[in-house]
Image 1 (cartoon, rainbow, N blue to C red):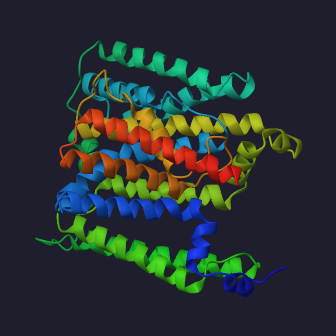
Image 2 (tube, rainbow, N blue to C red):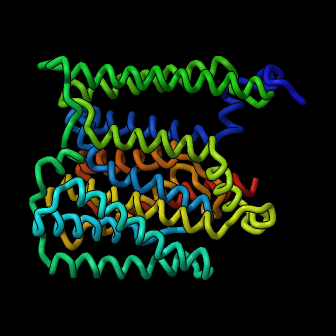
Image 3 (cartoon, rainbow, N blue to C red):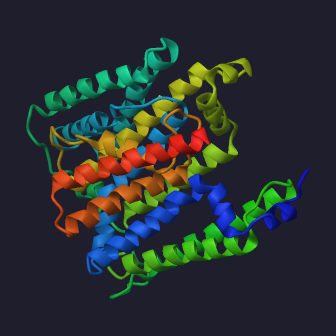
Amino acid sequence: METTSSIEKTGGGLAFIKSHMREYGMLISLVVIMLFFQVMTNGALFLPLNLTNLVLQNSYILVMALGMLLVIVAGHIDLSVGSVCGFIGAVAAVLMVEYNMHYVLATMICLVLGGVIGAAQGYWVAYYKIPSFIVTLAGMLVFKGLALGVLQGQSVGPFPPEFQLLSTGFIPDVFQGETLRVTSLIAGVAMACGLIYVKIRGRADRARHGMENEPFGFFLAMNLVFAAMIVGFSYLLASYKGLPNVLIVMLVLMLIYDFGTTQTTVGRRIYALGGNEKAARLSGIKTERLTFLTFVNMGVLAALAGLIFAARLNTATPKAGAGFELDVIAACFIGGASASGGVGRVLGAIIGGFIMGVMNNGMSIMGIGIEYQQVIKGLVLLAAVCVDVYNKNK
């Protein structure tokens, strides 16, 4: 077997990027897009206030993208997530505002309800083999109607102040900084250090098992740049109000799902299911149960996103969640997930979500009309899928 050192000597960083374009292409694209809009908006994109709004505006999309990634990797699709998101927000509003239920109990009920909704849809897909496109299209219509019925066609709010902190609050600064939230900056530095530690440990594990590694210079440069970006991003947020609570929730979820998809048996089985369902079944994987669980997971995350969105608006509206499914699916595909299943990474979905968010934010600052924004986003999505098909054919 070829050793790691000999693999590293076969080419430099550019050759490695070329052979791993799916993994690194989107990250490079995100950096280029951010620099482009930073220049075109005369520096407005990286203003602390704008970066904070960027996180808050895209938090619910990124949360749902984690669940959608698993659904797509398993070879399915879920068109109902936007409607489920709006419906859960409506239920939360009725429980907290009209029935004065404690926000913790109401939140738990909503998350369980999201899991039940995912289970109901996943049951038909997994055990009755009804195409997920049809089942979730029906779900999109059903829960859109239910949200309208629960709210009786009117907006309901405001939510309790404690519940609003889920989406509008910031982590407290124990150092009581006036111009700089020191706690948020320390948290950012800790995250950067944690990233470098995990990457170094992963590289050492791959080397120990004789697996391919990046050239050392490329590995060092990429991780130092990425760590510097995290520290810089944290500094900018710390100079405003600090790290938003919802950003911490997103980071925790991202770490959990990244570990689950790469380091656990269930995660590897989901990729096997999407790659070749028949082969996975013959190898002993319970494909029906796995498909069922991916939809349950999607339902819970759609419910969480609905709570985050409702907390941010401080009200539940009948039209909440409209079109969210398109942004969520686009984030996964732009982030490198394959339309045929079996391929996709958590970091890619997050990067894809941020690409969509930066484009929305940047084009809005530039004054580009909503009609042209939709056209541009559609073309970007089509280009991402074309690249996936091209790489697959190669």
